Every structure is written in C-alpha cells, then in structure tokens.
Length: 319
Image (tube, rainbow, N blue to C red; front, side, top):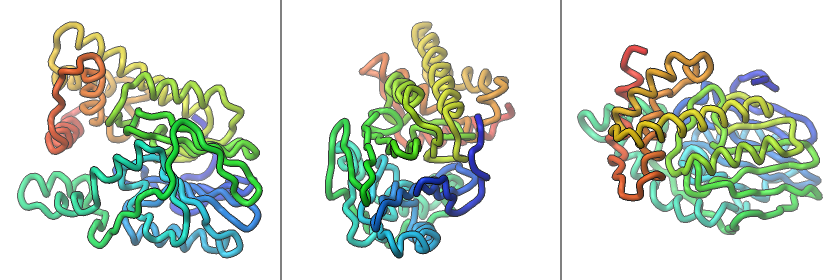
C-alpha cells in the first residue's frame, strides 16, 4: 500500500480540485470525508460523527467553499460517522442510495447517546468505543434525493459518478468517482490500516466492489478510514475479505459455532504479516457472523451489544 498523502488531521489537497479531510487514527468513529470543487460549486462526501467535529471540518474547508459553496452532500452509507453532521451543511441537496436513506432511520443519534450514557457494563462498553463523541443535540437530516445503482451529478461543470456497491459494509454503500481527476472516495468500502467490518454483506459483494475499483482508471483512493492510498490499498482489503470468507466458510461447513470460528480465525490473523498489523482486528467476530448468515439464512446473529462485547473480548485477549 502506498500512502499518497501524509496522514495528519485536516484538509489535504489531492490536486485537480479534489480534497480529503482525514481524521487519524481512523479507528472507531474517526472517519474521513471529501470535497470535490468545480466552478463556483462543490460537493461534500460525508459529514462526521458529531457536530463539533463536523464544524471543525467545515471551518477547515471554508477558504475553498467561500467561492465554491457546498451545493451537494453525498452520504456514502448510513453509519453515523458519515452522516450525523448533515444538519450543519445548510441548503445542500443531500444524496444517498435508497437503501442508505432507509437505513439512516434505524440508528438515530439518540440511540448512541443513550448507549454511551447507560450505567454499568453496557455504558462502559460503548464508551470504550464511542466515548470521545458527543451525540446529544444532533438532528439527523435525511437525504433529499435518492438513487439506485448509478447516478451522475454535475458539480460546477464537472461530472461526478455515484456508484452503489452495497449491500456490503452496510445495506447501501456508495463510492464517489471523479473521473477527470482519477480520484475515488470509497466510504467504508475501504479501511486502510484498520480492519474492515462487514455489517451487512455478503462478502462477495464487497470483493466485487474492490475488483471494480481495481479495473477503473483511478490513481488516488480516499478511504472511509485511514490514510489516502492507491490501488494497492484496494487489493489488500480485497485479500482480507477473501481470506475471511474462505476461512469462515470452511468452519461453517465443519459445523463450528460462529463465535468459536471467529476466535480461531482471530488467532490466524494475529499471526499474519499483513492483516495482523491492522487495528480493530476484533471485528472478525462480526465478519464471521455475516459469512454464516450468508451461508444459512436461518443463522441468528447476536444483538449489537453482544457483538461489541465479543469484539472487545477479542481485542483484550493476548494475540
């Protein structure tokens, strides 16, 4: 994987009117966003997890957006770290896939505020993941325009292509392609330096999305989390997903329980020279559950609290 830009907090100019807003270390909630600037108008790719973070980002973009106001906001998917700041982008048309718009209603900010504020073990668990973020006072603005499969958007004389590649990470993932700059903003179809988490799946859809990007005429790749990369970063994520799919499928066929399978595969990942160095490796617990569901529609995945418990247990264990 080649790092195209230094991985530091703030707005990074990629060239040809494209920018990336990066938030190290790229772990839980520390997502990236993008800005595509045309003649007198710009398009924002995603907002951030809370209002203070989104304000800081918009302030950093202000020298650019004063003369090219944000007229369009694209939410790549429904996770809050990519859409909870929508209310601060005044007067912009908000675009997402149909599936994303539906899923955004399912995890409102108030739910995360309640989990973070819960007493006892549940509150401690969620604060260990999301305690740095402020979910109170967020009024989620939903998309005003939706699409399926593909949509071309004009931004100050430039064509930007929106391509739906989900369900994969979530039920409605979208990548944002700027053909004239050879740039793609992937949302959480890419985690660079961190472990991908497959909430929806199937993993084969995500692999197909990676294959599609590898076949595109692109040079600069802005992930949903982690440093800016190139096609080498896409290939690494693809390899991880294929590895997990193969390993989990073999254990499912052998009759192994999903949680036992996840613990076995976690040991294998810990010993791997590439994947073992990535953060958040406990996400394998969720990823194995997703493989099992895709193989057996009757498989019942534990509730989200138990899934976070399992991820925390894996990451607390020696490896």
